[in-house]
Length: 554
Image (cartoon, rainbow, N blue to C red):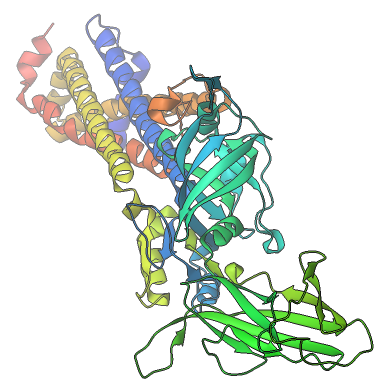
């Protein structure tokens, strides 16, 4: 007897059904158990994968896969300045394993509604306020996450031509807390090295991600605003003093930003501490150039090092009459300054009137950012991408992955895998018990058939294979139906979202289910193999049946 014989007998048994009163309900229960077990296993993997991906993508939307900063304080959550022009930046952008590189900056602050929400007993107005972290972003930012989370308003054009945009994006949580809406003005307060600073901004859009801890913490702002608030660069201006000194007009360098210790270069001369120069106005047209920078002292006998990128200002002076004079009318005469507008000043020296036009670069703040975020195409390649970034930056900067910055969230997400493993193990155990019980009942009901086959020369292994084939069919049928049932539920959930969740507790409003084809295939294959292996033990009962007693068995 060959293998075809076992298949033939098993198929006849299947076509004949399970007419016996005992076997039919038990086989049906075993089939239902396998259907439900497979469906539960697939749905468990689908929900766990979907939940992990949804929460992970939301966390990534706030911080990117990898962050590169110079110094990052976990206590203040504030980034220090970093030059935008970095040698490794082009290498990161050209690396095919890295998807996108974008500038960012963080600045903690307080925002207060300008709308009066209540009054005190003494009649003072009450305005809501809250502490947040301002995340500065620019035109190179990947806005897909914000676009998908936007609830009201629109996404402003941040850092366009380095002109600070007064619009900000706040979360729905923060908007409800402050009792504000799009178009409302907010007073924003920051702590800087020069003391507190206030900036008035307008709500351009409101977003909601469902991650309450992040929603109530982050506000998106133009990177140029943080550059301006922190005064990371240098701003220099040329002013004319109101009084002549020793008969000469005095030009003064007014410089802001940096570390407060400045050196200046007048008309191409070497840098020095001289912040004033005397000016002879005998010529009709004069151009004065000033280059300023903050410096760091290298030693008592050494020249100081320039610290920031220098800023340049120009003053163009034109005589408005034909008289010729260099000196003021007296040693300490007034220049009679008249300010026409922000850049134009008129003054008198002796009997002549002059016009001075100031031109500036606007400062060098736009040469700095707080750091960079690197986006990776696949989260599974995060560790390799982090090593790549560290290689390009020569390990001189602080490179942190999203899992480094939020370990508690990702440890919690990884625990879901353990839950899935436990569920799969329990479901397979239930399927094994069901199939073992069903196979034992089938064997007992076919005792007489077993005796007849043995009497005509059938071997124990051949008879065992008949029942194993029979059991494999039951298992296969249950796996196919269970898989189809699970896929149908996933489709319906993704289409209609009928299974709801509390977003405040689970970070998502609907149960997320994803099609995870490889795990589905492995579940089906693993369930089939394991259950078939488990049936080898109850099939051993065939060897214990005596042909003589079996034929007499009723």
